[in-house]
Length: 397
Image (cartoon, rainbow, N blue to C red; front, side, top):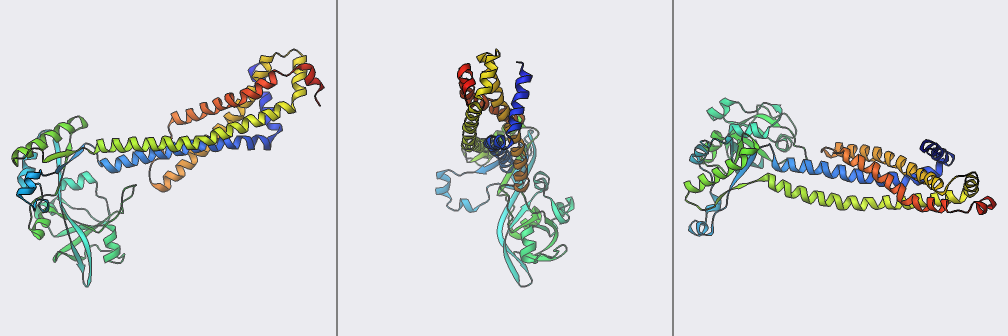
């Protein structure tokens, strides 16, 4: 009997017992679907997490960690901004650096008439706006003249609009930040993403911020290189330059967010593997269900097997027939499980706000694994069918 004849016979057997076949496939459908959902959501979450941590591409952040000797000589060192104006000008001379993103933050109060809220007022340079892609929901973003002229204008977060303005349009209104008037020119979009959250933030051109708070130093500096190959070189040169300028050993260092993201990615992959393995238990249970139904099928079709053997069918042909039936059953269940997993993962990722990464390797793995289950759990019933005695089978009632 050819493969196609065995396949048609398998489909005919499944069609003859529709409800039993559906219930048998249910374990395979749920098992394959669960594994794909876990893997897809895990990979999508990992990609979103890495994006949130590393931020825009080709950047490294400088940070300052004073030595014990520096702390002893200056106990107030942590209250001082670590980056000076001359530091920024010196860093601009490093050829591998494309742009320098600098900012300073001061916790303060913002007042509108009688209402007052606590805010973080951040002074930023022009490169900050470009690199962080500050999207404005209402009004406009900063212009070049705002930075050069130190105009008393600001961008506020979505939360300030809700808390201080009770949801009304704040564009053109004036608030007092640290008792200094600031005209609101824009409201930032509400952030989205796994690690995104809204806070009470006011962004000011750095010249304006310096005038209000009387400081020309920066608390945070991020370097952007032309490409990823120059990133490490730029970071090392920048750290070495600042240490030389301030007569320190290794107080100025580079924080490589890509390495941190890689470490977190490894953790998420391990967690995905563990949870995926737990979900795979349902596949094992589904396989046992397939074996049970196939054993029942062999018992029900004992006379049919006896007739086939009496007409010349070999044990290998009987074994092949039942193996193909088992594989067909699990393969159909596996394909339906792939669609279930793919669809569910897409729905979850849509509402969660991260990509659903269903790779072709996962889909192919689901199909192959379903077929393997069909072979493994169908082998015992098929072997039992092939070893039936033809004469005893014909007598079976």
